[in-house]
Image (cartoon, rainbow, N blue to C red):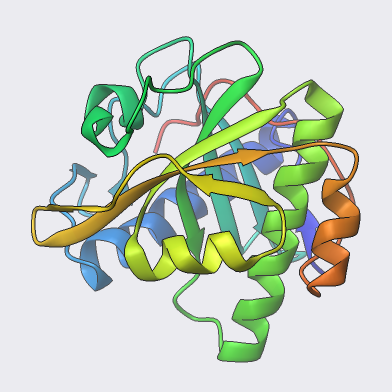
Length: 208
């Protein structure tokens, strides 16, 4: 069974979030070689993992991490406006109904079919969460191969500017508009795959 962890329940929050930060270290530092902070040699956290960040975490019945994403309010500092504004041909999208998706993470242990399933469930959870919480737009920064996948999911997604080389990677910025039609569009491409439960997320991360 795959569930979306309700991190407002503290017991689940501690286990799920520790596993998420550990998985982020394995993916973004060990696999992709990102130069980002690591706590205690095990957990990937940065200054944006603060009380304003929100998290969607997919886990199994024992809280083992399967996939996760961090959501940042664009009314506060976030990656696109703080580090990568040059990726936008126009103004960086901001507003109370706009959140930035960051650290979209699929666990390294997943085999290809399971990985695709978890990816689809996490994308679906992002849409469900947006519709339930008044979020109309997501933004994000992604390397070009992943950016192309996001654009092909079927939702209303557009590039905000031309991809640019950054630290040896070709990065681009994206805008995703979420409406009541998004579910039907993702169903048409086979992406829509709801989780077993939908829940809100915690504002305050657990101490790793």
